[in-house]
Image 1: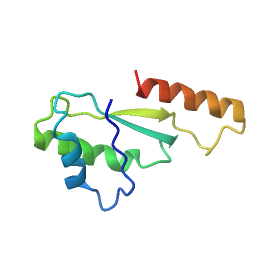
Image 2 (image 1 turned 45 degrees about the vertical axis):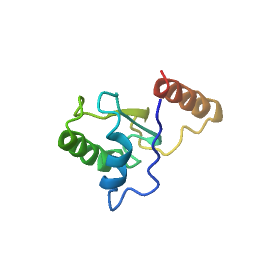
Image 3 (image 1 turned 30 degrees about the vertical axis):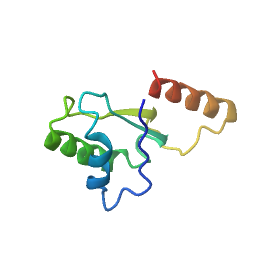
Amino acid sequence: VAIVALEQVAPFPYIDLYNNIRHFKNANLFWVQEEHKNQGPWSYVEPRIESLLHKIGHKNNRVQYIGRKSSSTSATGYHDVHDKELAKFLKQAFE
């Protein structure tokens, strides 16, 4: 498992990301975020990452999303539910 953290996504760090993933051309790539799918940067980064994958000839031209489902609220309102959701998608990320 290799983890690359993007601290800033705009402007998109194409060169930094390229330098981190070029050695893993056969790896499965995942975008993992704690925010709900429709509230974090996923919709912004997905096409940019996939464009980069295509340009470098990565075996997968798709990056997969791991995180909370889309929601109209920013939190579940229940700490236990929040913790269970977090544990579930972190488990997915490391499988």
